[in-house]
Image (cartoon, rainbow, N blue to C red; front, side, top):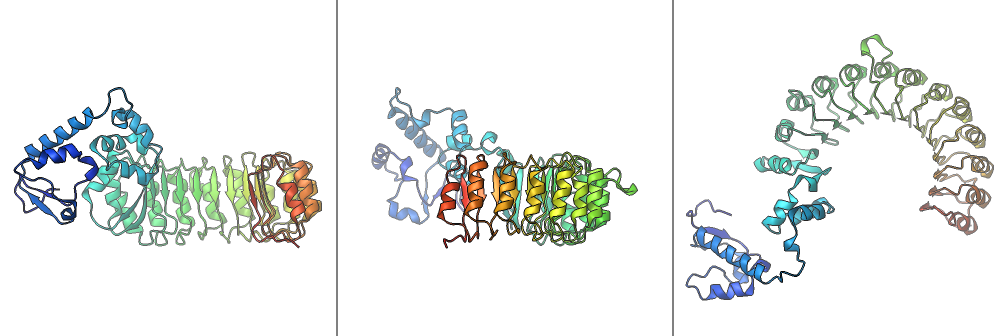
Length: 466
């Protein structure tokens, strides 16, 4: 480090890395009139040495030459590895260790700064004060994904500092507001495909106007917990973000009309977001079955929908979802008005879902499993936690759902060893089972389950023997 008040030929040393200095080099310097190295104890205090830069460079070259001579040419040594090989090795390290190897020596630093080493890495930043070299360093390493953990500076610095940014995660940055979004996005950002604004509670529809105008290539937009987003914002999304594949609106105060905008069923929505594959509507409590009708009509590419805690959704709404041949994942957790009849609608409608979650739907019982066993043959994951099911229901699904890999029946207090025996005998592809809080099972049932050939996860939780 160069001191501010030092002559050009003076260096400030706070500590000399001992492993870099060979014993021979230290002894050779002992005979010179100018002492370049002080005892280790004194190196904790800044020392000034009147040594020219040329002499230091000469010394460094001599040490390097000596170290090279000490290595047998016939031996394999890490110092002989090509930078390309080092970069491959460094690519397997976690982020913290990537930074550490870059501090070992210049050769390792150059190898560690290759873009291939940092491919796919997301930088997690606290943007509290100006740091001119930060963004240049990220760009040099080819980092294109950034998560901002806290921010006291302008968001515009990020966009200008990393011009080819692909992913920006601002989740939990409570001080981000419309003004910050407006200043950050003042021109097209064609490379940005992912934006996470979860829990940015000051963000309103005005920000969505800016996003829809300048982030045309956005594929992922997370708005969970943005409580000031309304149906107007969904119109803007429908108009501007035609490439959107994933949209999360958890706990946003949107209604059936807003979902209609996304689905393109309203005249002012310009065809909607036809490319959507995931729609998160968790805890959107004002949505009704009409919203599901819009979804089934317009979002024909949808593969996954989360309706958990949507208490106004009823069995009738599932008639619409059953018609969606592209739908593969359906989350109905804690939808109080979903019952056995809704499962009948799904099964009879020809649904091809492979993952179904009806946990904590207390109107789901053994009859629902009868319907599931007669129609939902593609299921690989079934969650029934806290449902009113028994051994009889498990018998039904065990005889037909032979591709089932995940079965969650935690807190199903009516399940006994008999039901577990049936599962163990028939569901031989099961990989994961949740028995949390199943108080009527014993070690006999568990022994049967643990013999499943592909089982790798068994959750017992509050289970205890009676």
